[in-house]
Amino acid sequence: MLEICLIVFMGFLIYQFFNIKNKIGSFIEKNKEKEVSPKEYQLYLLFFSITIIVIEIINEIFKLRPHSLLYVNLTIGGLILLFYYLAIKIEYLRNKISVFFISIFILFTGHIAHNIIIQPHDIVPIIALLITFYFSYSVLRPIKIYWYYTGALFLFHIINLAFDFIPMKSSVLLLTYSLVIFVINQVKYAIFLNTRDNFRFTNEIVHKGSSLTIASNKKGELIFCSESILEILGYTPDEVMGMGFWQLTEDPDFISEQFLDQYQDNILYTRKLKCKNGDYKYIQWKDKRFSEDLFIGIGQDITEQIKLHDQYKNLIQTAADIIFEIDTDGNFTFINEFAFSVLHYTEKEVISKHYANFIHPAHRKKVADFYKNLEEKEFNHDTIEFPILKKNGDAIWISQKVIIRKNDMGDTIGFAGIARDITELKNNEKEKRIRLEKIEAYTLSTKKLSTTDFSHYESLNSVINFIIEEAAVSKASRISFWKYYNNTIICKNIYSRDKSDVYYKEVMDKASYPIYFETLENKTVINASDVFNKLETSEFQKAYFIKNKIQSMLDVPIFFNGKLAGVVCFESTIKKGNGIMRTLIMPALLLT
Image (cartoon, rainbow, N blue to C red; front, side):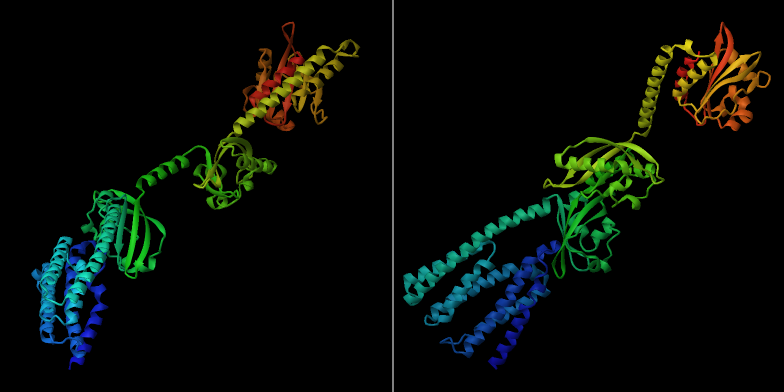
């Protein structure tokens, strides 16, 4: 019969042993912290009662005691087990269970001490007292109760030694091993104090730090939330327990049914969460799977960084310059919207493409050397000018400044640059250079004319031809001299780049071109960069300009003794700007 009872209670003990975790619950559940101590003492009661029963049955089966205490200890164990089940049902007993257990533990210790005295030759009570003293440190709380308990136990040993209630050998053994157990428990207490300080430090970081820590089960229900949520989002930990966090913060990306499917370990991601005051904050999360049904998430408030990033992004995207980033291989990793609008490429056509694809072929080596020297000599903010190609093939000149981008280790990870369109400036410089070249050519031509001895020329006509040819430094398509006589002008001399004489000895009269003749008689130079949009030349459009493909014209009247003697005419088959046309006046003066 006893063997059957032993098997039953051993099976019950093993069953309860494997259910300890479920009975205690998760250590991290914030809202159940107050239940940890009652549940712990409930388990103490359960296993204490079962252990008493099992040990006493074993003692009886193997006749370890000289006098049986089976019924007494089975009764004690049974009553404690009954009290355990009553505590589960009755809230008052459950709330006070730690007090009841400590009382039962101390009373049971007294029962063991009584057995030592009345049965001095029974070794079981001596072993039971030592085991009880060893575990007393773990179950007697606060620690002050343990000190009282220890003091009372050593007082019991001293009385035994003084009055010989038990054999001297038993008293010495009890005292000696009690001292060993006391030292072991004292070491455990010192370790506990250190662990408690570490726990307090960690707890302070978790609850008072700048990060937000949450824990959830596999359904996504929160079972823990750090107190820092109050400062970050404005909610209390109790408000966000269960599904409250997702409902209050209005996280659109959370789907409870797909929580496990979407979960990724140690991955950084950012969520936009609603605060209690209605504002929104950006929290950057990193999750860790702690166990099968426990997921830890640590979040950092990066709202200010996001705002700064957006401001920086807006500044870049609205800038009237090309702003870009390339990696160490020369491939574009970023380019702003202004660049796309200027160059007419799409993002897909630029990102991950090499910068050389967008540079005029004649300047690619120059730019490659620039980047190479930039990295080798670490020249920051160096400037380089070169033409880049738009999508339609047109070239625009840019002035580019570049800096080296480095990581925290000091390694180069790419380049960032800003480029400004200087096409107009380059064109102005080109026009200025061309103008200076022309002026230099005019100066040389003037010097040649002023030092030439025209007395050796056979006729005035040959002199005029020589002067017209010298005036060809103007780069005009045709230069001609028209002699004025009796309200008509006749082409007497002509120099043409294509060697044609399309209107040599052609005659024009005042009756056919009154506006033109009136302008010349008023000593006015006719400067027409576009002959089709000039009043003074409007009479020639069909009969003259279209026929001879003339686009620009400069006519300079020549007066002799105050009277109109002729006209020097510079004609071009391409349009010329006003600045360029004005430079034609100088060679015209050579003929006046």
